[in-house]
Length: 208
Image (cartoon, rainbow, N blue to C red):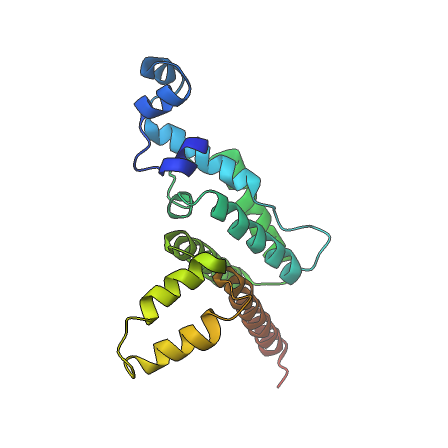
C-alpha cells in the first residue's frame, strides 16, 4: 500500500514490490498467486481504515461520519477509489463494511429500494469526489493560487468573463479549499435522502 501510494497501482509490479521489500519476486509468488490477489488485500485494508457508521448515532449523522472517513482515507490512498468496488473476491473487511452501512440505513427506516438508492448515490459521490481530488494539480493554499493566477493572467481582457470572475473573486480569496466542497455536497445528498424517506413514509401511511 505504501508503494502504491507513491507510484500508483498501474506502475506497481511484483518486481517493484519485491525490490521495496528487499526480497525476490518468487518469494512473493510463494505467498500470493498474482498481482490481483495483492490488490484484493490492499482494497480490503482500505475498507478496514474507513470508519463504519457509529451504531449510537441516527442513520443520517452515522452515514455522514462514514462518508467523511471514506473521503479522508481515499485521499491518503489516491489509487484506491477506482478499485473499491472492482474486486470479485472481496475480503472480510470489505464485506463487513458493506454490511454495516446497509444495516445503518435499514435501522434508519429506509426501505430496501431506498437503501439501494442511498448507497449507490452516496458511494458514487464519495468515490467520484476522491477521483477528482486526486486528479487535481492543486486543491488550495498557495499552490492553487499560483496555478489559478498562471491560468488567468495570460487571458485577453474580457475573455471568459465568468471563469475570470469565479477564479479572481472566489478561488483566489483567502481560505478557499476545493476539499471543503465535499461536505457541502454530502449534506445536500443526505438532506435530499431524508426528504425522500419522509415522503415515502407519508405515502405508505396515507398522509397527505
